[in-house]
Amino acid sequence: MKQFFAVVLAVLVSFAATADEDQVEYRQEVMSAIGGTMGAIGKILKQEVDRPNDLAPLAAALAELAETAQSVFPEGSEGGDALPEIWEDSEDFAERLAALKDATSAFRDVASSGDMGQIGPAVGNVGQTCRGCHNRYRE
Image (tube, rainbow, N blue to C red):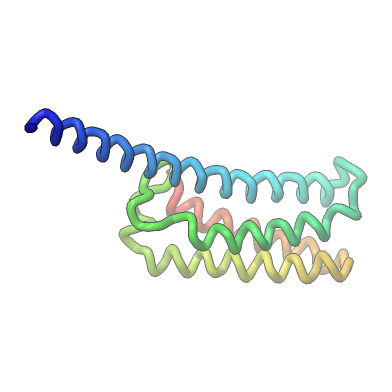
C-alpha cells in the first residue's frame, strides 16, 4: 500500500511539473509571437520588404497578443527567461503589461488610420514598453 501512494505521489508531482512546463512554454510562444510581429513590422517600416498593406493587420495582431499576454504569467508558472521578480512585484509587472496593452492599442489605431507621421512614434512607444519590461523582468 505504501508503494502505491509513493507511485501516485510521483505521478502527481510529475503531472504538476509537466503542467508548469507547458504553461512556461505557452507563455514563451505568446511572447515570441509578439517579438516576431514586432520584427515583421520593423521590416515594413525600414522598407526592407514592400508590404505596407500588412502594417494595419500586424498592428491589430500585436494588440491582440498584448491582450493575451495579460494572463500568461499566473502564479506558479515561474521559469523560462522570466525572472522571479515578476511574481515578487506582481503589481508593477501588471502595470507594465497594462502599458503594453495600451501602447499596442494606440499603435493599432494609428496604423489603421494610415497616418505615417504617427506610426513611427507609436511603434517606438511599443518598443520602449517592451524594453522596459525586459530590462527588469527577463533573464
